[in-house]
Image (tube, rainbow, N blue to C red; front, top):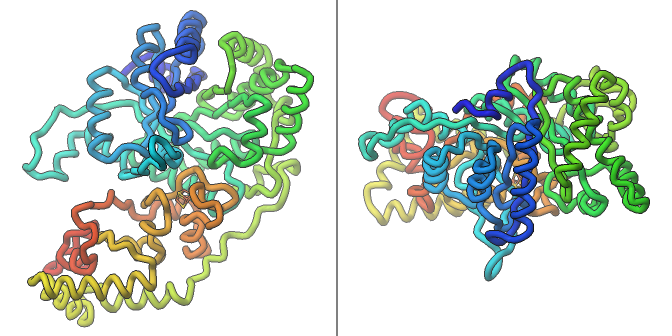
Length: 509
Ligand code: SF4
């Protein structure tokens, strides 16, 4: 697994630089030629340790990252393949992992990905069979050889495969519920086997600092690369209008970039990027992940040269490049200089919704087998499971009740009790089970901007004292078992077929 990127990344004395390449549609042409010319120059320069290659960015189809990855490697650069889950089911995920291992692609950045956009004959089917936490665990199981235990003797064993696994986090969420979940999910990703982290793009230096402090406070030593994105005036305007999922672009910076564009001043934004590199280095980041539309290698060389000159003065530079979004919530009040804006808001209300309270009591009454009512109800469900007719009747009753109360879609593997009695199958368009995606904006969903993000709603139902650490310890939910689709989750629960693996004869869940 040792390569130029990992050697640099896990060497505490080195500051690692990566750069993001974005393939477009088509298998060749000028765009691909430009990317490969960039790779050749990067190799000659020697300061960039890996070229990351996006995987259907923005939810649009594009040249597969492995294709560009092979070309990049031929030119002597280490590829960092984005491993996005929006278009792959779990079997395809495994298949890709075998493929990448065989081809020697050792660095993968695991991410959910933007919701698929309309393609050939309309909207592409969003897959999201596994979330990033589940995928990281799958990779770890494949590496440790523990993968097989989920199949018994049904599948032949294979030689364990390993890779350098990265994940992403956004410290730039504006609202408290989104931000707390981002950190909580980060803990789950690291616990699931993530070995390095790349941040979402952002321009709030206090937020970069917050992430580093969060890592230190939690004893996390996983290397973090800060995202340094250099937007063109057009892209800055696009982001300001909220067109890129999960990005809240600071208006002040957008105005500055627009003014620079009018004056054909290209250099200022490159210098700003160089200053960001210096500050992130000073704050303790292990490296930076550079990117920007329309950047030539000469621009990147200029950024890196300027950063080398400015590094000793990093502390004085932070004011020049600090662009917070007004109203942003910060995890640590003490880390927030006055420039950062408003006071920390109180923690979420944590109201135990009266309906939620009722569901909780009902759940404990009917679904705790050691209690008489639970044993009776469990026995009834198992009795119904004996014939097709009684199974169908019970399933219809369940569908009516849970459809009315929870907008249940009858997935057959119910997670309502773990997720504050809000259904993730109907509530989250990506059906995520272990925390939100990064696509929410001002607490609203990436896919349905007229609705709150499902995880914001969950957050508003959890206890008042919720912290990332607390939420990060919430139970890991495994991928949904599709053999249970449209079956009775009550029967599946009592017969031990769902994720709870209840054994009615031995103990309570
Ligand atoms: S509900 Fe939240 S987590 Fe789900 S897709 Fe929308 S923004 Fe992402």
